[in-house]
Amino acid sequence: MEQRELGSRLDPQRMTEEVVPVIEERAIVQREVVETGKVHIRKKVTEEKATVNLPIINESYEVTHVPVPKQVLDAPPAAVRYEGDKMIIPVIREITVVQKKYEVIEELHIVRQVTETPLVQEITLLKESIEVERIPGNR
Image 1 (tube, rainbow, N blue to C red):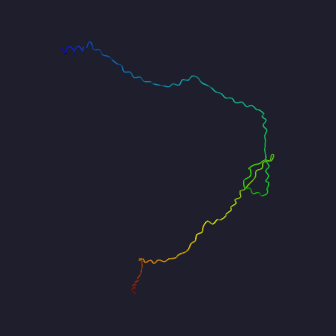
Image 2: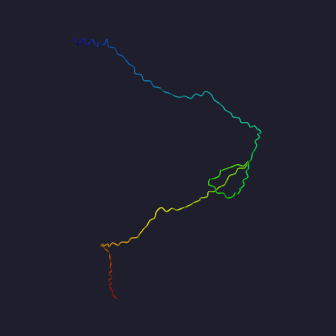
C-alpha cells in the first residue's frame, strides 16, 4: 500500500512543469544633437552727430595767510568758521606746558656701622719653581 500512495503522489500524469521567467531591465540613454535650424546675425553701426551744450565751470580759490596776535588758549578753536563767502581755518600748534612741584613725603636716615669679624680659613696656593741646568758643549 505504501507504494501505491507514494506512486499516486508522484504520478507523472499529475505533475506539471512550470517555467518562471527572470526578467532584468536595462536602460541605455544616448544623446543625439539634431540641427533644427541656423541663425545668421549681422550688426550694423551708424554714426550720428549731435550738438550738446555743456557749460564748463571753473572754480579758483585765493588763499591769504593772515598773521594773528599771539593767543594761548586752553581749548582748541573751532576747525572752520565763515564770515560771508570767506572760509577761515585757524592754523594752530600745540604748546606743551610742563610744571613740576615737589612734595617731601619721608626721609631716610642712614648711619654707617663697621664691624670686623676674624676669619681663619685654610687655602691651597700653587707655587711653581724652575730649575735650569746648562750642559757645556765640546769645544
